[in-house]
Length: 259
Length: 295
Ligand SMILES: Nc1ncnc2c1ncn2[C@@H]1O[C@H](COP(=O)(O)OP(=O)(O)O)[C@@H](O)[C@H]1O
Ligand SMILES: [Mg+2]
Image (cartoon, rainbow over the protein chains, first blue to last red):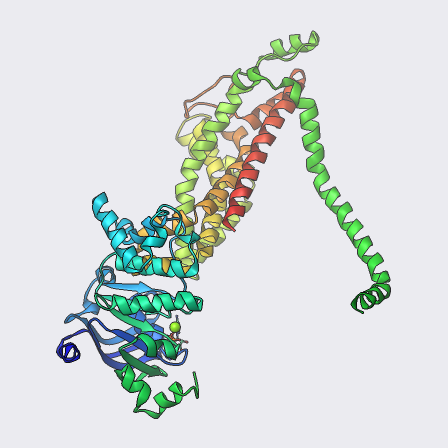
């Protein structure tokens, strides 16, 4: 029942005919896809196929590179992100990176609230306390760090640091969280904690996750994209893709023939 | 079994062992040669200088020649101190830092942000050339700019300008190098939070590299502390404490030069040098410590 309602719901992100090139080399070619709200969508594919480029195009972080050109459009709730200010856009699109990257000069508390502090957004102390507690609870870190909020974030273990970085992205209550192989630098226990977290977070957020770990995509994603050489080869429900891949290239990748 | 094998190996390489020992002895001797000048300098300064060091030495102005001559004739300690030089050095170094730090840090940021661009490469090269300009020439430049046209006379400001130009390339370099060592991912983390670029630099990169910047600044300061030549042409010297930056002002190295030229004041050379050396050593140790913490 709930499934059918989700199906009719409007997509939160519509990627329409998106192509991205470094100089003249296309890293993403004519990708069109709709990302549904409150789902985990995995982007899979062999390394170098354009996963990170596609993900970074969603909050315009790809524009940091020089000589990049972008064609096509990405609609976030019907407005084209390439017409918005990248600064405002990024507050709606949280991002988590491959390696945990807490700010080394900041305490745990300040790391969570960094988006507000660095932007000079004024908030009351009480409001800040609430944001920090909510975000840390959301990533199941609150109980572990509530007595050491003013210690440096870099003292935490790798897995805790990554959850701190997720909390930092959640502090703005973004609509979408973009994650680029967020567990590739973590040990198996920390990885499974983050995976559990993502399944829980999709109740309130939409998650787009780049992973080259197929079993991770199978475990936690609702939808999957399979990319190959910059093209979107296949897109659909993860369950269907893993049991019944349509394109032979998807099948070869999933059965480990390349990747 | 294993230990027998080890013994055999040792046997084989006894010739090499001897060579190793010779090399080691050579290295130790050469290291001693390297550190002996600094050890001898410190030894000499302490032995000759400690007698003059007292509270008066730090808070009194330089004596005049007659006072010094009488004291020397009677075999007494020379009265007075070098307070005018200490205060002058402090004023000029602080002023030089106030001029050089903002300019140097901003230039360093500019170079970091524009890697490979023509203007940045040009700026970097010019800054490197500036580092090699003899300090007496910088003194001449400041004489022409400041002494002649700004303060119409020898002044602390003119001294500070020449010292600031000396510090500038060191700060530029250390700022750029420090920023380059900060991982790119930190910058991305801040940008992904919607932080505008200039705030990322000022609120994330600069604080993260702070100890590196500070190291460069401290090394720059310890470099200019002992400069004498440019000050001879700009600050000139003064026998009293002077806080007016448009007036001639003394400095510790200037006093050492004056003492050298006055046969009655020889004793003060050693104590002043000892003080200067101690300050420079402490600054160097502090900046090394900071740099060590970073890595
Ligand atoms: N900064 C860059 N400059 C030029 N080419 C790049 C840059 N980043 C990535 N590429 C190229 O774009 C393609 C896609 O890269 P990427 O999106 O990082 O792939 P993935 O994340 O799937 O491994 C690769 O061929 C890569 O060489
Ligand atoms: Mg990648």
